[in-house]
Length: 412
Image (cartoon, rainbow, N blue to C red; front, side, top):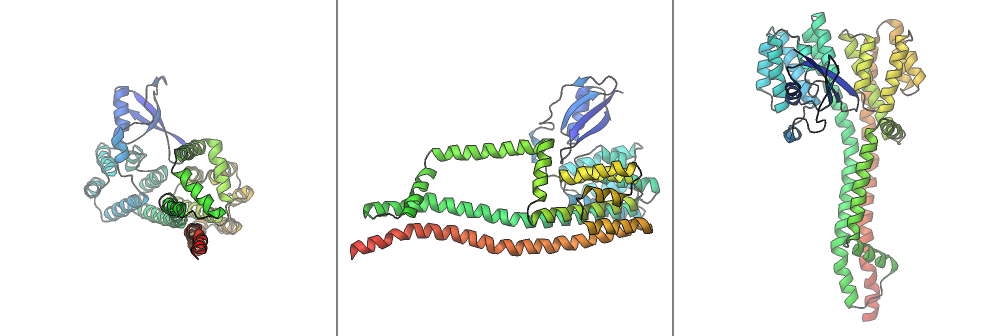
């Protein structure tokens, strides 16, 4: 049976390949669509002849309606499978019981396919590798190491704990970022609503009374007239276009690198992101090391799973240094991106031969630091947001009530 190679992009924008066997190119495309893989190229491995592909709409419009598999879903899956394997339940029976409880259709299809693959003699890790939209390379590598070492249940428990910690960190970051964004959007909506609908009614009243409008009031009335005119549509179109162009630029290699570098320099938030990457790096490396994954392969996986491009490039450079015999702590220190405390503790772990435990302690420390940073950011942003919303409402009310004084003077 011919072998095909499909390339696809991960969530972080990195290119990956998947090999599959199929009778025809059409059958290969159906295989990829069933597994939810949005591929960019598809070629026959024997002669690398390109096969016509539809990179952006693979899987059809139904793909966009499917509920994505979250980190929490995968953590629950790993916990359940670990408990069943530890209890002596066969893998096939365990997968069958878990898939019957799954709600996301994509996850259920993946588990059903895995049952068929395992039933035909494939390993669990290999069957998971066929579903990159469900199981990332980090998950597959840990399962593969657990199967090779005969400690699958223990490895799955470590994987579940790792996924739960990563999910917790993500939720903390989202909580810190979503609050100011939500309040800012609401403030803009309040401003637009009052400017477009409230100011015109006051302006008509002032016009009938022949009141002399202060400069600030005239400015607000002019702004209201503009926002209700066709010219505002051009501004909205320009903002949408700018947003789309920014997204396209961020998808490029140089654009992502520059923007991620700027993000790390943002006060408070840049430090929070650096601590988050450090905690995830230490926690993941400790879990992979305990599972028996080689250090170079672990660094490859960390490079793939690190979202910030600057930090991921630093990990990639460290991987090259480690492959040449440099200690990991020394390689990280030379990149000047990770906190010195984390590097120092990692160096102590390498010297004492207890790197796994030291990495776990570093991860615990920075996770506590992240919680404290999130509380600090929230405590600083809350009053600022209140002042912003209050200032917007107060400015509009002042603009509307200032002319009242001239009206009262005329009445007197």
